[in-house]
Image 1: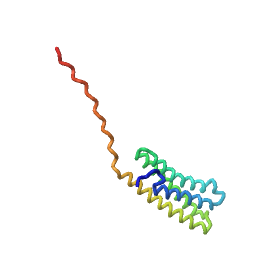
Image 2: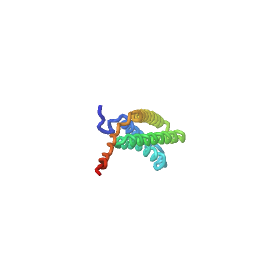
Image 3: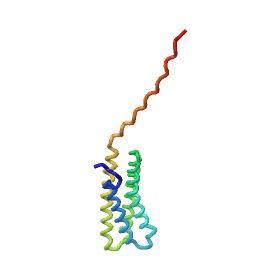
Image 4: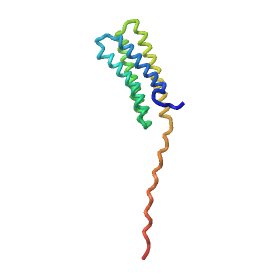
Length: 144
């Protein structure tokens, strides 16, 4: 199946689910975290899917891999924020299940990102057209 856009990538689709779940979970954080952890979690989640999309739109594989690497970093950032929320006990007992769901979804996105990065890294580079040698000038005439 040929991909028509980044939206056809499973990692992009799961990444978008992660964004929605992150917004859902972070909405239950205390109001004093509106500009703290809530904002940081949301920005990290959006960064994951946005970098997958931006990398897909680049014309060079190296650029694509670079953006996937940024997405992986943002995923680790989100995972750290989730752990901070857990350790500080910022969610009520009933919300801890959704926090676990968020972590499981993040793990899945991480596995998909890793596979995509490995797949792109292991593909042989396309052969660049060889430069044609410059035509050498005709030898000087040897007339006396």
